[in-house]
Length: 212
View 1 (cartoon, rainbow, N blue to C red):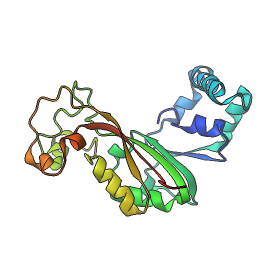
View 2 (view 1 turned 120 degrees about the horizontal axis):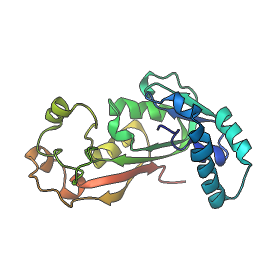
View 3 (view 1 turned 180 degrees about the vertical axis):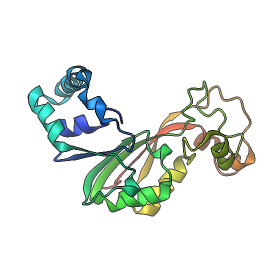
């Protein structure tokens, strides 16, 4: 993300290293005075209120500079090595192409017993009153041809299957259903593959491992 995603929390809670994988990351953001004096200071205050003041603000800034590694490549093209104990993403999975290969690579980089938490947004990302407007009146390929590959259109059960096939012990936790305001008629491509509950799930968590 533009301000390093979960890095501030990870560093505050003691991670040794935090890798931010974002091919579109703009490093100029980190040079802006408001990044340190407004954003990070407020984050530091919030985290201190939640978890106690584990370090001074100056130490927090120092650790952010030392422990956060920015990878400005897509995961499949990166040279990341080693095994990671925790993987997090927020509204990222739905934008990934190719999804199956990327999740398989993520599994290769996850340590045995490593934990993961991914918030997935299944809406159209276009700010419409119904987040599903325009999604279910055409096939995915027709949607890609008209609107480009903004989202991969994998639904919740697809993402869960892909994680499991890659070797993850994963569960899907529904978070926000959003059937309201949808006034279109889905074509058979969608209704024959998914229930209404699956089609109108706006956000969900993919998390694991289930045991341990």
